[in-house]
Amino acid sequence: MRKNIVAGNWKMNTTLPEGLALAKELDAALKGKTVNCDVVIGTPFTHLATVAAAIDTAKIGVAAENCADQDKGAYTGEVSAAMVASTGAKYVILGHSERRAYYHETAEILKTKVTLALANGLTPIFCIGEVLEEREAGKHFEVVEEQIKSSLFDLSVEDFGKIVLAYEPVWAIGTGKTATSDQAQEIHAYIRKVVAAKYGETVANDCSILYGGSCNASNAKELFSKPDVDGGLIGGASLGVDKFLPIIEAF
Ligand code: 13P
Image (tube, rainbow, N blue to C red; front, side, top):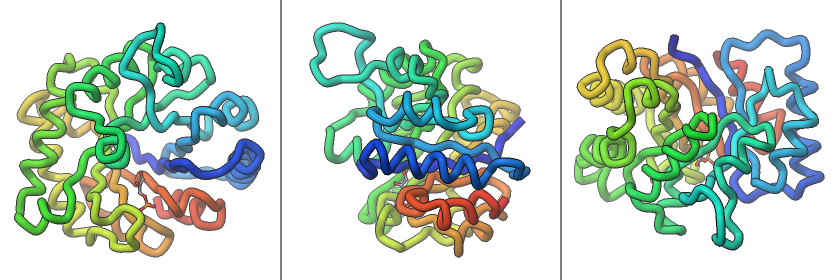
């Protein structure tokens, strides 16, 4: 069954005390509330264990924002998928455009990260999306198709079924410029078609495809009303409960 998901990506924001306070505030705000989507918060590595221990993780899933492309060993400063899983986190955001652009994460590296995440029981939230020049050149469909194929299409049907996709047009991230709901719907439907061609209609229909890029309380309802938009990956607006909760409640 396809799930609606609203996931926060805190990026490199909040100290541990600040992040803990934010997570606790969200936990308290959701207590006793019925919401119509799964809620996830993606926090820096340093916060994962503390946050996971402080909140009701049956209600709010915890995500890492990255993991290593190696299993274990002499990789100073890296954090493995097994380490992430041992904190109580259940998800890992992979392939974010900031990781691709600033840390040179290639399709091949991401493929390895996805495999390691799945092997350690984590749900990858796999990000795809085109830059402005690609959108303007009308290449956005082929760009996302290639990103999906090159990192995910060696997965078994069973493993692909565990992936959450997040379409994040790079030109909409942190810019205040959101894709229109029609633009989001158009490409989400295309992504689902790409998945269906490889893994079949059932897997494609069950796959949650989130939209990310300046999603906020004012545009979430319209975006989430589209049949192929199954939620959001939220950056800036996930850093305050006053902004994040209305997005959750948009479902
Ligand atoms: P903003 O919501 O700040 O545009 O960030 C989106 C994003 O990159 C989420 O991963």
